[in-house]
Length: 326
Ligand code: UT7
Image 1 (cartoon, rainbow, N blue to C red):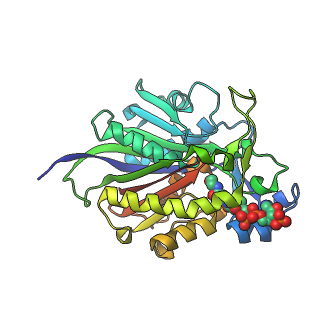
Image 2 (image 1 turned 135 degrees about the vertical axis):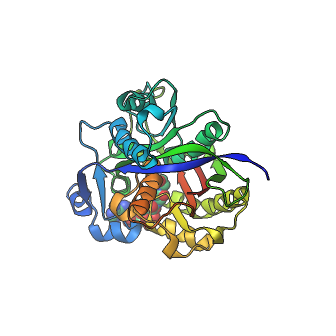
Image 3 (image 1 turned 60 degrees about the vertical axis):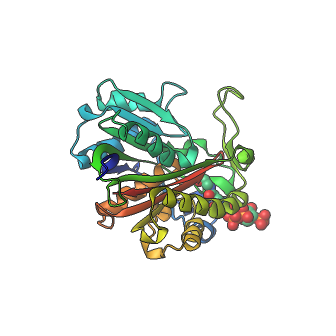
């Protein structure tokens, strides 16, 4: 029997800042309404980081919970990847700040920037370390303070995003090379730089020297999302050697209730298998998948051994999917 090293998710954690911003709160600052936001997006509220909370603070809280769930301590960690669009500083990476704050020993730590697809991309990169025996205990974190990128006069974007962090611990375990193995089983990662203008931030270190604000042609992104994510889902399932119909839980990026339902319908996943948190968290970019995963583990829906399908799409445009047996 073939023996293969798999990257197994041994713990999941999440963190949401205390402050909750409702749709009615936003209706006081832009021309919108609770009804419009719920009908078009499914979003009811979002969390916002306190002024003194940086993305690394959110990441550390999520990482602590993931390590606890895995029965590991910061001393065990030898790889940290933080998927983020909103790092504390231009440099160093949020990952090395997280390493310092957690008190992890010298190891590998870096950030990964693929916007809302960052967590799926980061899992794939971490798999390259863990499943090749180059890391024994990896923290893969999606953490964002998206509210810091908002133009609070643009009702088309400022109602859509929230702050939060989610994390998983990945550890190597020997499998038999079948789809019954626990671990990351398959990926499909995509990018199309020609679609930059649909979703981007109008500032940056080497252009304006300013942070900038998020700009989006929402309906164009929407159109792109359903079709292209579906292709990546089928490709990831093929890479894993499974059928989409075998999936126990679908954990989509939480951008819009209508998008995630549309994708589920298109790939033939029953709505009872879809994990949704968009109503409570809004779009937390790279944090949305691990946060939803964490919540569904917490409430007992997702159990070890089950087959999970993750997908995301964001600025770049980037998108991708991952099949994992938890
Ligand atoms: O994670 C990154 C990926 N991002 C996404 O997946 C987001 C994808 N896009 C979407 O979720 C949706 O396109 C939105 C929720 C952003 C917008 O919904 P839509 O149904 O596509 O609306 P629209 O952009 O076509 O705009 C329809 C109308 C416009 O008014 P007019 O021009 O028809 O008079 C907008 O000005 O809705 C207006 N509108 C709003 N009205 C009230 C836009 N935002 C708002 C708002 N409140 N917050």
